[in-house]
Image 1 (cartoon, helix red, strand yellow):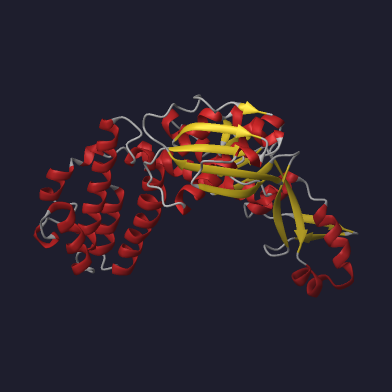
Image 2 (cartoon, helix red, strand yellow; image 1 turned 45 degrees about the vertical axis):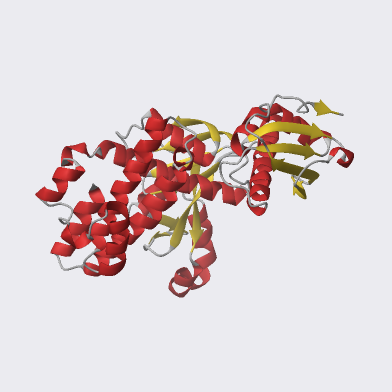
Length: 379
């Protein structure tokens, strides 16, 4: 993999700190924050058995490789983990990247470099999209309708990676554009700290002219090309630190750009999106109650949701989603607390300014699924 070649390259250059910082980042970000987090349902066995075995095999191989790479600097903990994985000492294995190690791990041709680039692009867009959400204070659990995206020229993202982007940003669709033109506008912010000492009384005149610079001029200035303005009867050439070029979103879109990537999020919410957001918040609160109640990850439950009409409608519209996510075999939806009985755990929560009561109890495998007796909406 790329991390093996990069770590070996740094070690061959006697750059131990860089090599193991890189490996640490791989473990915390690529492996833990992305692969393990994204594969949780696969590990739980909710998917196909072959897919579950493949998920565990990939994790096993990644951890084994990390142990081999880190053995020179963390010999004891690497050996302990490696023995747990394989039953053998890590110090008897070949270092990754050598012929003996690659023979058991697969050939270098197994690496899909195009997929690595696509996933890197997805992660860049996810980071920008989340930043856009933070600006407008819309939580990730609230679905949005669309995202406009710009990626470096020539990069195409396959459907599997695109599904990852949709799910991570919780948007219904992504539209890729050839450029960010039309999404953002450039604006100039004069730097009075440098302009004042040079221009004295003319500072404000120059600042006004800077604010009126056209987008082509600002693009040229950002690229390092010389840009000048006319003040009275003389020409002033702008120095590199005379102004700051800022990007501003056009229309209602929230735009973020970095490193050749642009993500423009549409923050408009309709009633359908709001209802789905409420259902997702409901799932989050139910999962917390499951954890606080000491239930195992695989325990099925009988579930009750009680509250005002808006939360009841959201729960009913997204009944299958709620039951699937919370492993609920039965879901009861009602408007009054008098219906709360026979549950092991009951909790009052606030969802989108609505007072809601959720209740659950461990269910039997033979109980009916989400559409069973007692699962209807009663007003």
